[in-house]
Image (tube, rainbow, N blue to C red):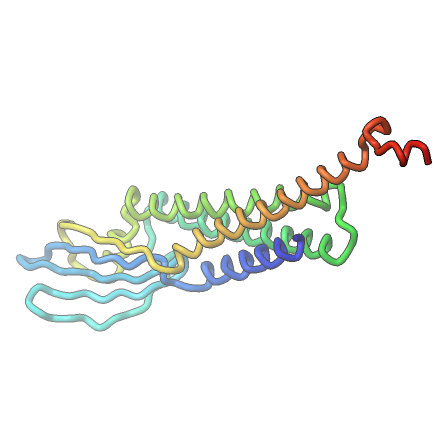
Length: 219
């Protein structure tokens, strides 16, 4: 059972690395007005970098270019929230690594009854799950409430005037966080059943002598 939990923890660790390393967190189409015409800025970006291209109403398309998210942010709210998401995911990565170490140790040895056992696995898996959930909440907040895509659009195109509308589609890099959360819940469930089975066996071994069979008492 600890081996199964170990696989879940390792998978969670790998997926957090994938989420941090890939830049398919969101795709946005942001429309602006400019000089009596409309311009649509299309962005695909993640926590560190992304690509953008613009389409003018007349049919002109500007070639796609790459940008760094941190360099394109001027607002304190968007910059601090983006940094917070990265920090949260790094802490989640460390929690997942510790949980993997705990489950691996208990797999190859007699399971500990102290913090190195189920209690430690509960702690680090719960921490990893909570941090992943927090990152899932902060990223849409940065887009919807802090207008992250609109701010990045101004770095991709000049002379943008009035903002008209925005459409956002979250990519696989973002939804990986949901899979990470699921793996953490699965690992916690496995260890819970192990802990419950161990407790039941311990109680069975501690049965009072009067509940023992008569032939055992005579013996």
